[in-house]
Length: 515
Image (cartoon, rainbow, N blue to C red):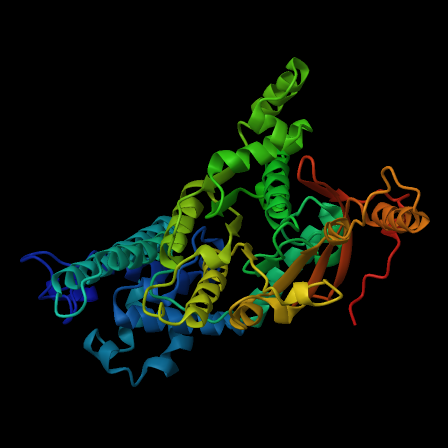
């Protein structure tokens, strides 16, 4: 097939919108001949498409006619029809642009020499790569235009964040596209999740929390989900989410060591955005939990040589842990999304933790209204979960209304500052520890007194405290994937560790449904 047959002209690799923006003599990256040769290979052997390592879509072609031809090929293939120049003819007889290329005979010319069959994969890769380069040109041009335009508010940091978002989309091969998934592809993905749950042996279809009781209730942490974990101060929100982050990263590390395919692992690398605590404070908590040493003793240096040896061993074991802590204070939601994209690109993280939501800042446009700002932040976190296809756990405060009630168990209406948090979340969890409140009600101690009532009151309190000490509840108040309910866990305050209750613990038998 000659160059004349394909009518390759210098103007073919520019568009009216870009001719003025490109330097003199420069054109957009494209290879019209490669596109034509690839289409010819597909029309000769329709199975070529099925064997491609990188899926090619119509928008990856530069020539508009090639886009329409390839789109029609895919449509006919979906109908299990054989696609040839003859079967394509009825769809393009009235195509004016095709007439300029020679009309219906152009489709026959595509299959004339069959050279594309010699290397269809290489042709497809080149078409894909050139499409990405054109997207980079678009991103660069938009960035330059925005930087030169000072007619409106100058916001360079916002422009940088938007540019990084666009570059991330290009890197993911998703720039400029917003395609609807067919039910077939969606159902195949759902079947894959079900298969993962079966193979995991723990009824987990997402990332593991490391706690069997929670996994059984929610089926693991699902990609694209926003999970809000809320509770009053002192309930252990940060402790629980730190435990989950460690468990997920540790499972990923162990699965790698065991030679398990990463796609089949229920663990993941974790990005932990700590706006309240420093990275070393979080590391101290994790070391305390793994070494079984009080975090208070670690901070004050009150440990024995044996304790220090256990601490050293724990530190060595955790050296390779794929847990990345970002303790930058006062992050905006846009900056957090930018940093999360970088971690996704560099370390392929599979879980994001934000501690906590109310310490994030909005874009600045809604700062005059805190409710609107929180709404913007919660929507931004949900968008991030969908964009990166990872679960996002965000901690949240609860209003003081909890303290005014007799029953201190949190409810959805207790979420602080915005109802949009509840709306945007796929799951809402509350951490509740009754022993925290019972302990605060301790009556006068019966020291140096013979008052029977004092003894009885303290004995009654001690009995109540014994029944709830070290017991924590995770209240699943909202769950799009299943039922709501309560999960009982063990909490060791000394080392800030949550774990499953032992099977023989009478407190584990419990009706977990929520009315």
